Image (cartoon, rainbow, N blue to C red; front, top):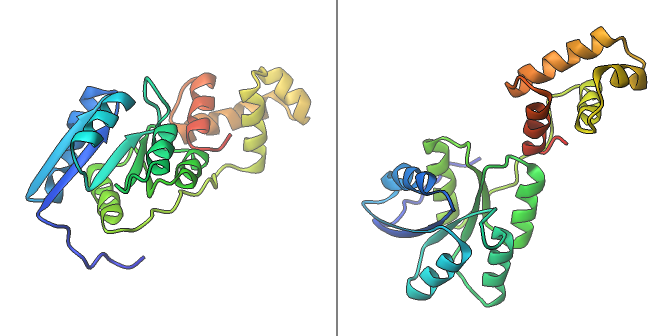
Length: 203
């Protein structure tokens, strides 16, 4: 990937749309180094975002995928349908490649996981501000075919005994695979394991 050779203007105005106030405050702090004069407006739902857009022009909108009053992608599609030209990048707690692709298909210029650190966030925002479209993350997982099979059965709620019977494996072998899955996702329960796999788009 080529390095960015264009600098951002000294004055930028961003709209951050997310229903978690603490996240909005942290996001504003993380983005502060982007410009000498960075103006950050916030909205905690779709209705507030619409109101902000009627009152102000923005260089970029960072939009949460899930808002309390309307899905972020529906809001984005409505903006585009009426000719809104402000670039939009989606912010999401999900790392799912499926969600990312849906956002790009809907017209977003990028999909930024909330798990990104400050530096990665600023780099992603800078690229979108410079007119780039961020590619969707890969949904390729490092899991083995057998681990993926077990993960799928885990998601269906099957106990170890049923999994071992269905796959023709010893129950101890299933437990070994489960331990590896728990370590991969840094979790301690079956429910958390399935949830983490879904967030990454591996289920």
